[in-house]
Length: 446
Image (cartoon, rainbow, N blue to C red):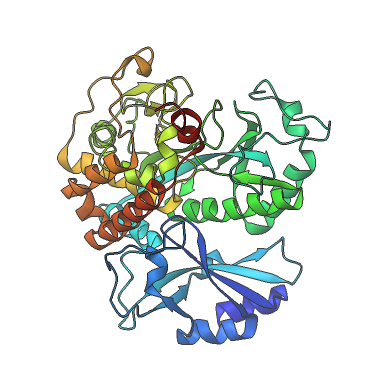
């Protein structure tokens, strides 16, 4: 028996969800009976069209054909290390995350999971291993079946909706005690290494921190965690949303990514020396983040809504200055000893694809090391007093990535062409929508 057959028999599983994260981080794939899955895993029997990687969030496709004109098959290759029980399905079900290949065995370069693997190989070849720890924010909101109406905060066990932004309020979390109890239970079943839970500044806004670990494993965990939170919220009659800015006059939701490099053999943190001082490698890494993150902004702010979050005074960055224990800048270095010296990239929104956000951050740091980019000195005081140097809209970010030769080469030209094509199609779809703001203020006034 192979590893899949053994696991399925031991867990009494009757069907398997075969998942593929697409460009937006949406779970695509197929559900198959368990025994057919075992056979398919041995014989490359599961296929899907390559076009799943260029489908937009509206279900459309770019006008320009950036995949093969025949829209041929790609083959699903399940990663045994990601095999897990699905706790919210009554039928005993498992899920597994798949890599993808073509018929000749070549990897599908435009797969977001492959992009992260490609970037990690750069570090592996240098004898280094990235360590990451994501912090993921999200909102709980009352169910909203009409998108013309704004979202509103949820009602907890007191029967009253949240008001007053109860940041770090323990009793505010306990308003939804049943939801979070189930969330922790489901996360444990899925093997998600969830560390702490806290109430963030927005009404109904929460944050979950993950323990630090392998970058690919943490990207898989964030991908699965998003599905889990949505499922738990629906069971409680609520929605969970990872939109970057779901409600006006409320803070946005981020995915902060703590990161450092360790020696692959010894495990020694390469960002601080024996005396606890910053190493040259650490400074070059930050220099790369400062120089290249704006060029790769499309990976951290991939949607039209993403840019609403990046405004002053809401703990969201507007530039890539760096500072020590400073939450007003794009790059924060927490107070930390030798073994835990790291940098926190605060640019990514909660709406970002975790594979692409982590890959983009690591690529920028890698380029900084290769080019020995000087980061300058950390700033003191508020980063909001400095210029807004990040792209302000999706088209700005698209133009930045188009001009970023080194970033595109590191991520893969085929991937970048496909990703930009999808985002251009989504921007075109958004531009066809007339908003309520326009009707409110322009209809009878201009």
